[in-house]
Structures are given as structure tokens and as C-alpha cells.
Length: 274
Image 1 (cartoon, helix red, strand yellow):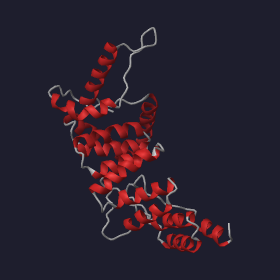
Image 2 (cartoon, helix red, strand yellow; image 1 turned 45 degrees about the horizontal axis):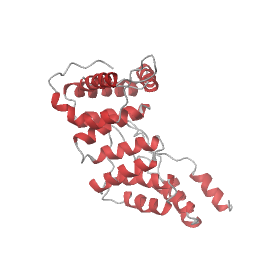
Image 3 (cartoon, one colour; image 1 turned 90 degrees about the vertical axis):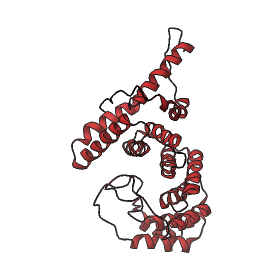
Image 4 (cartoon, helix red, strand yellow; image 1 turned 60 degrees about the vertical axis):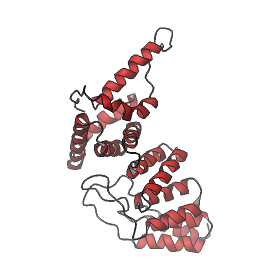
């Protein structure tokens, strides 16, 4: 990623960064393997400088992941478009580190390529800047789900739905989370609500298809009924999911757009008493 231009006058940005810095660990190890207080303070100041310049403090693993993605993205048209988006939002952040929309998009892109820790860092910054940014809570919950941290994911999704009760993305995601947490009756409620005409699914990127592009809600309703031993209801919803047209792709696919492929197998197993 290109280095950002200095922003030494942005001292007012210390406050939005404080939550993020509290969650980071920066250590210099001496010969005795310990981190003196002075070294920790110097390391924290370096971290602040990097954040104010719009640079990312990647972990070793994520640094490799990001470099590999940069190399491969250039080989396809869609990959190059995503790379251009990443560079554009990073430039915007270097000019205005409090640009919550650019931070949100960069976080989403980081999550897409597998840099989950960096995505969480940006999303935490977004929420520090705007505690009412509902979509940021939903996306952070998705990142926590990627890490199998279901309790934190649930906390964020509950907050997202309080802020935006008509968010199809948040309701659909919480329904999937309830299935992962073995709470099928709660999953049913959220999945049904997400199907309401009042609920909206909002793509995260320009030109992106929504998370319900494949309309997998009936499939997950079938999973919930199956977990509750309601065989007939499960079969009915699995069959409904098979009738949903497999929509073609005309843009970026949302990274949480599920296209379940085993509905027919599940129907067969249920009909045969397994």
C-alpha cells in the first residue's frame, strides 16, 4: 500500500484512536525478554504516528496475506478494481483519518481478503468516530464470526438492530449466528423478519450485489426447523430454496452472500428418515 502523506496537524484525532490503541499491544523486547515502560511508550507513539499517517500496523501473518492479495489481484479485472478501491479509500483516510465511510469500506475489503484483525481495527475506529454507525457493528460482528467469537458478534448485532431495526443484513446475520449458537427458535424469528418487505439489504461497495443475492433465507429456515425436529417444515423450506432462481453475477459478490448447495441432499436425508 502506498504510504500516506504526513498529517502532523491532526492532533485532534488522538481521541478517536484511543479505543483502538487500548486494544493493541506494542512491545520492544530487551535482552532480558521484558518490555520496559519507556519502550512501551515509544512503541505506542510510533503506532499513533502510523495510524495518523493512514498506514496499517499489520501482524506478520496479515502482512503476508495482504502482499499475496496485492500480487494476485492485479491478474484479473475484478481484482484490479478491488485493488483500486483499496488504494482510493486508503488515500482518503490519509487525507482525513476520521473519514468513517472510507474506513468502513477499507475494513470490508480487509475482511474480504482475510485480514480480519485489520478489519476489526478499522471498524473499531469507525464506531469510535460514530457510535451510531449501524452497518459498522454488523460488519464487525461478521468479523467476530469469522474468528468464531460468537459472544462479541452477538453483542454487536444486537446493537446494530437497535440502531437499524429494518436492516436485512443485521437480521440475516444474527439469524445465521443463532444457528451457530444452537438457538434455532431465535434464528427463525430473525430470518423471518429479514424476509419482510420493510427490511433492506445494502451492498457495502459500489457495484456490489447484496448479501441476499442468492436468497438463502429459506435454506436457513430449513436448517432451523431441522434442528427443532420439525421435519415437514424443514423439507418445505429446503424445497422452497431449491425453487429460488440461481441468479447470475453482474457485479462484485458480497462476501457473505451464501449460495447453499446441499438443500437437495438434506431433503433426501429427511425423507428417508435420517
